Every structure is written in structure tokens, then in C-alpha cells.
Length: 90
Image (tube, rainbow, N blue to C red):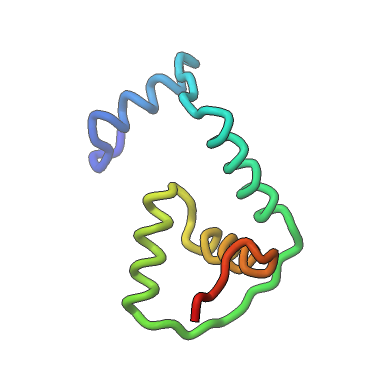
């Protein structure tokens, strides 16, 4: 096994292999991840955006906290803005 994997990760891997792993996600979390999946399945277009290093690092941290790739978080934020669910607050 990879020497960089810690004990908790080893336990998770073993539980997945033995099929004893049970998700503890509640319905709200499941729905949230379903929404993330929808975004990843839509036709997408790659863009280039210049943002400050500070903002980029904060986005990466927030994405880690949410357990999603930072690209997905950015796409979700843009989508929510376009749908009027969040405002700029300028």
C-alpha cells in the first residue's frame, strides 16, 4: 500500500473493498452533490480568468472544505449568480 496513505485512509480503503462502507450523508447533502453532478454533466466551456493569488487560494480552501474541486466551486458560484441566487453586493 502507498506509504503516503494514513491509517484513517487505509481503513476507508479496506471498508470500500469489503463493502462495509455506509454513507452518512443526509438527504440535503445528497441533493447538494446531485446538483454538483448536474453542473459537471452540462456542456461546458473553458475560460481563462485572472484573479489574485489571495482570492485563488481562498477559493481552493473553500473548495477543500466543501469536498469539491475548485473548478466546480467556481462554476457553481457563476451559475448561482446567473440564476439570481447570489448578488455581488457592490
